[in-house]
Length: 179
Image 1: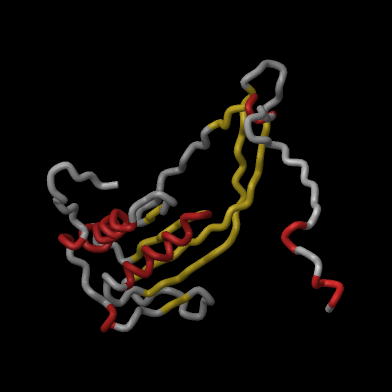
Image 2: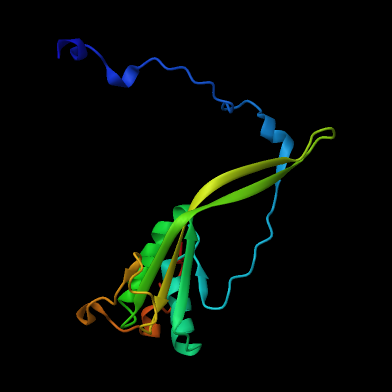
C-alpha cells in the first residue's frame, strides 16, 4: 500500500511520563523496603535462585537422592530463576535413572512493605505478580500420570549415572579463581 511506504514505524510520536528520571530523586528515595521473613525450605525441597550454580544444585539433589534416600525431590523457582529450574531438572533426569516428573506452573502475588525514612509519611505496600514453577521429581512411579504436567522418565540411553567426582570442585592452578 502506498500510504504505508513513507511511514517510519520506529519513530512514532508517543509521549510517556516516566516517574523516575535519571539523576533526579524519586518519591521512593524517601522509603526503605522492609525485608520479608523467609520461610525455611521443606525437607526434600530445592529452591532455585537466579544466581545459584546448577552444579551446586545437582550436588544437593544427589545428596537428597543418595545419602538421604529420598524418593521425591521438589524443585521450586520464581521469576527469572524458572529457566534455571528447568535446566536443573533436565540435568537431573539425565544423571539419575527412572525419574518421573510432574510440573506445576502459575502465578503468585508478592507484597513488599516500605517504611518511610522521613517523619510524617505512611508505610507503603506494593504488590506484584510473579510466575512460579514447582517440579516434582520422583524415583517411584507414584505421580499422577493423567496430570497435564506429567512427564515419564527419559530413555535409558540418555542417562549417565551421577558420579560425585563429576561435580567436585577442581583445582584450576595457582592464581585462578572461580567466578
